[in-house]
Length: 393
Image (cartoon, rainbow, N blue to C red):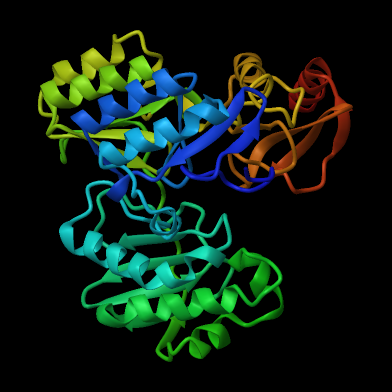
């Protein structure tokens, strides 16, 4: 059993208020219809049936008991969604864009193979993002310790929190990433941004054998819910990235009936259906009654909240309910309600961030869960009063 504050995996569950949490690292961020149905059925049979999309394009399942963890893991292996080898599963930490091509998938495999000898000692939250310059749905804005961007015949390697990046030939990338990972494992902290605090990113890249340096690129903006007519892609976002098993089954039915038979996972908590050419598919998703966000104009798509109480034992705050109440009262959605300072749903800045404590909510303006509050220990009514008073002319 993993201690709290680390990320769960398929073979290392984490305790929570509603049972044990497990995560499935979906290969290449894509599910065929059969695998999606197998995942939904196993989540319902062995867990609570609650399915959450994570900020790394993984799937988190809730409500397991100690005796149901193994049968669920066995079902995932049988469905082709996991390795039967826990070490190989631990090394599967490279996130690729939805709809990526075969070459990028092969490079992800090569990187994970190079990391396999390090798997027993990899930091539990360690993760890599492998993007490409021409990606229709770029993922470089996701949280990652190392960001790789394939451009032409080279890969740009950038460290989280670092100013510099390195250009590396495609064939050399796996070895260089293993070297960077080995360096990180010698540091006190297991996250690249924290470890870089006392180091120059360019120097660390040079130590790992990367000498052709340039400024790290800015991440392209994330693409969320909506219909991309040009590419025939419908992006569906469950509210707060959470759905039940029946919803996943019905989305799989849409993929089978209207799309290319695959569901693509985005690290921005969306499920993408490709090959969508009929407007009837968009109408079907809109009228499904599943509560899915299907339009880029739906402000709720930017609401951020962790599961909160009673699902999580670390907080008393009913975060998702409170986020919706704030949205309804304020008419704005640049809001993050976090049950505690860990910021499991995200750590980036928002106009309004609430962090749950034993005394109530801490209110943070234009910051994230780790930033300094402007007020502490507020009830939701007091939060609303403070925000509405500030908004008055």
